[in-house]
Length: 403
Ligand SMILES: *Cc1c(COP(=O)(O)O)cnc(C)c1O
Image (cartoon, rainbow, N blue to C red; front, top):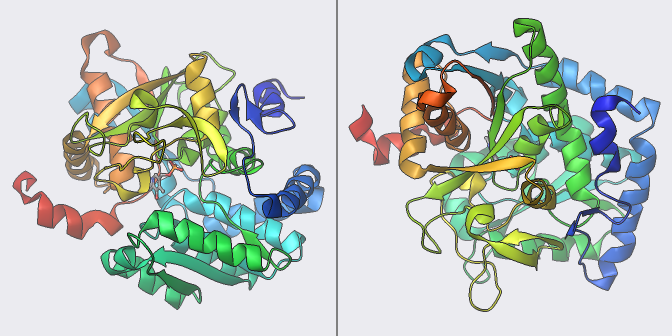
């Protein structure tokens, strides 16, 4: 066992637990198919051909390694040394393709013909449709009718990529109903399809698998940062919705004495429905098949959440984040809608890099942290999880005062 894999190889345990968090809370019909995925992944995660094919895809198709960039102008502005891991330069413009390509490769090894998933803002849907096109798999994306109207460009992209977008007209016609609809479709044909979860959430083995697939970000960044500076960063930070981009970059530094910050969306206030800061304001509970920290209403149902960035407005976090924060290995920071918009403009103006609104939360944190006097001169590495092209119309319409 390599030294920097000690933790990763021991967590989660066989049953998918990180301390008391994680596990698998699923209907009986899903037990068998999820066992199949678990057993297959256990073997494939050590299989030379699987790992080699994944490595080759990352290099020649996705364009990895993505660079680590020293943001000199932003650093001068803020007072500490800020480095960006440029996942915005990964093919399709965000980190999500790292796990989608691997999930599709897993489907191929399992002899599946179809990938099924839900999507909210459409980012996961587009990444999965891309992976499906690459492998010649069918792709079925379930999406609420309200979201379909709101996220037109992503819907068009999925269709161009050959995916079937299934409109969901039940209930509020958004993400929750889309999840139910996707699960139903998967249950009808578990033999030929793979349910492809989009973050380090869901029942075992998904939180582990998605973390492992994203860990390439952290291991690359560690080597690149060391090569550039001869040291490790003082701080590594990432925004957190479900938590896949954060777990990805944290994985490279988890054994080191580096502060890890999970940046939660503080939205526009502290009341339920105004934010999606699950670790900060939530409590333990079971949702979507796993035990974690969640935001719930009086009836224990997932609470309404808000963030200006639709990729991180999720009422829970991956179980590993709940665990790492409970033992004090990670720290939780907040970034509000307003701070994220400011960071969005600041990075664009100072560095010529337009960040995704999700990633803008990590940038906003870095600026705040750097400006605090006791942190002067420290080095901060953030995971710039995606590019902001998808957000430009929204920002210009709603926050033109920054122009
Ligand atoms: C989806 C998305 C996120 C949030 O997902 P995590 O699983 O929390 O990483 C963050 N940034 C971008 C650009 C996204 O598309």
